[in-house]
Image (cartoon, rainbow, N blue to C red; front, side, top):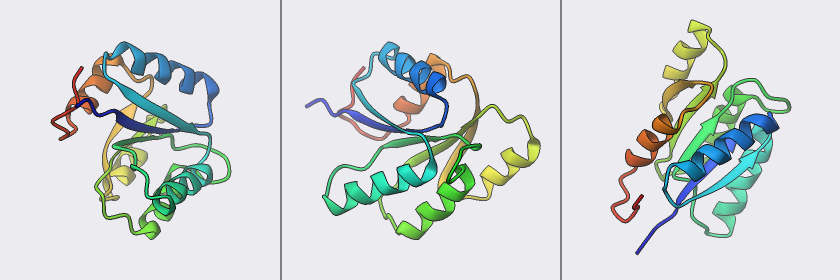
Length: 137
């Protein structure tokens, strides 16, 4: 049985979303990528998945600087959802500010900080870190 990796990308930059989609395709993994252009849209999407009892993302990549709800506000709203399933979340940002990297460490849901641009090798590492035995490249 081949399980897809469900990837949620939260980024307001269409070019970054396009690049990540191409990188996902080049990993060789079967992955379903959903992109939301701000944190509020992502929260609404997660609520829809929960209400309709659908599979939650295995991995979420979150940009910091976005309109409506930025990455930090998304994380605050996410924690209020009370999701028990562990989802690997990474901040994906062009920010080089040390305080952003340190702030990311204060969220228990955030596994790490990735500087843009995302590489194929880095995404493969994230996919391989998933504990889903049935995911095959």
